[in-house]
Length: 289
Image 1 (cartoon, rainbow, N blue to C red):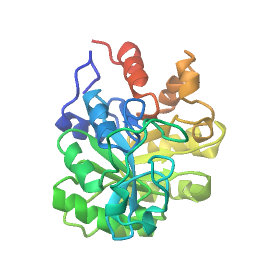
Image 2 (cartoon, one colour):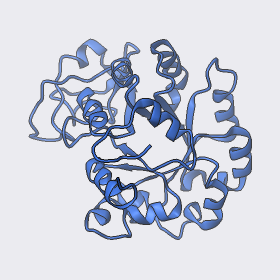
Image 3 (cartoon, rainbow, N blue to C red):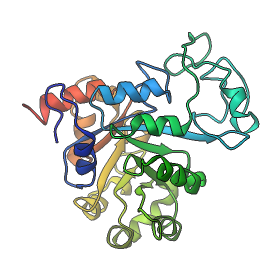
Image 4 (cartoon, helix red, strand yellow):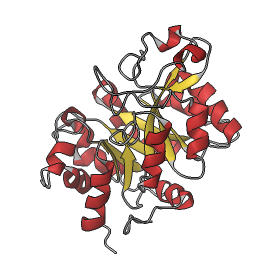
């Protein structure tokens, strides 16, 4: 599977590529395609798959009456014309408000879109694009049940910083094993010493590496050698402190120390705030016609 021309990968190609640790580069749109629609909106998902993006990252929260919705913040203030904590508002109350453009904030124009449910998002993504489920590890059993019910387990990708035993308990014994990515950051860097157990027994589909400095043990050759070929390697390039400074801005300046540096380490999944630009970069540099 490659991003040739503007040809969109089929969902079958996306899933097959994702399940291959040595597959071609995959693009992840951070909170959806928020430069063209409100972040975490249905249109941000739609614009992502229409642009040939492989994975859409969304954030899951739960309303007071137990409805799973998409929103990054615990409050609705930044992204809507309403105010309040999601866990203190009912779904009906939240749906009265409209989403703001882009990343929201003070004085940003309103759209006609409303806060979507996770169910709506998964049904929209079905057979089209993968969905990376952020902020919902504490809700994982509920989310898994919803994915099972909507027939979207292949679309969903769970992730966490949890320890091996907790992850293993979640993954094992399910009718269909969830797709899962293990995050490694400073707070749980002890996992690096346990990587053989992770890659041989637990077998996450991917590892998300978060490192403030590029001399971090998390991104060392020693660590990468344990991961390459065993699982997908995912790096976030939205902000410098997530990727040792090798971020979107550096990439957009034309520097090989941006996205290319991450690829050189073995990353084959990049989460970005510039999915169209990364698509173009991959097409021109790595996957020509």
